[in-house]
Length: 107
Length: 119
View 1 (tube, rainbow over the protein chains, first blue to last red):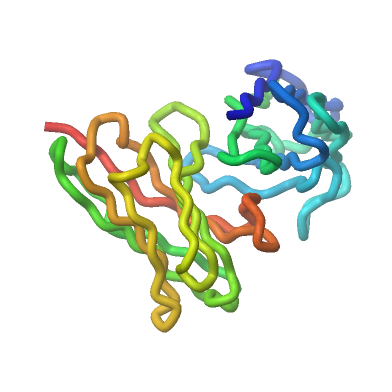
View 2 (view 1 turned 60 degrees about the vertical axis):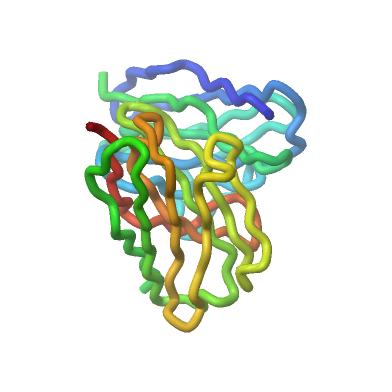
């Protein structure tokens, strides 16, 4: 199965700063990668699908890029509500797999 | 408004069985592929199982194959997960989720139901 490695494990930033989260796949997943946000005790929320497409209702400050094995989720200017866990997920190969997550915390 | 509400979780002894349910509303359930995803305490997300909109095609993670069975009742707008031969490794919050556009992405999630396997 395809292993997704997310880095860093924890990212400490202040509101207003730019966040850059990485997801690396053990083999190419083409552009078939999604990003999810999860807050404590809440269900995940789909942010980005197929590497760079924002899901319905997702603010423009969230953007995704990459293809093949290297992907990035960028939050252009952090708002207090953005501090959460973020997971990437691939659907290129069965079984679908998730990365281990990045915790975005307030500095 | 689109809603998924899971139920059926609880504390169960190793080797026991549980049946989870997921009630759907606000969308055409019978047209949607559905997934189960779980999250062990303090851990990340793990895809468990998926079912097509008719209930004729099911897939499972290797870790649950032969023990878990996914099914659905489109007349009742409800998704199920029958879990047998449970072990401590199955302890997790179980989420049901709608497939985005028939894919293995998930665009609508329930709040989850907690399964604890312990003696």
